[in-house]
Length: 96
Ligand SMILES: [Zn+2]
Figure 1 (cartoon, rainbow, N blue to C red):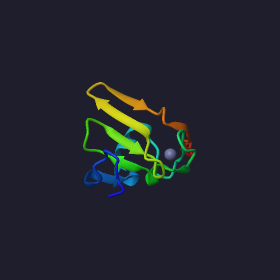
Figure 2: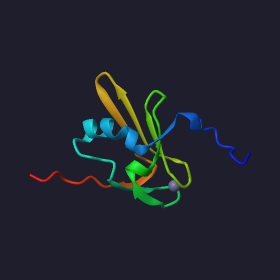
Figure 3: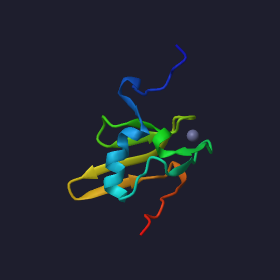
Figure 4: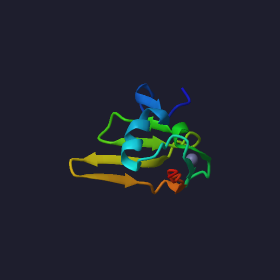
């Protein structure tokens, strides 16, 4: 076994699985939104991130280095977005 991470891969989804929640939060389609990992500099799309949705929130991890890029926790009256693992997150403006 080379895997020594504490991640439970049985529970792993890809970022597209979180598309519905992200759309609800941001009001735009997010899976194709560009994002850069602050840890390894890998650039990709949100839909390519490794998603873990079984915990108390949604955790999106970098495909390459597996560090947490985005964390979303929803409470009854607020949504917490922890984006410290991302250099940037690019949201397209919806055409009007
Ligand atoms: Zn990374």
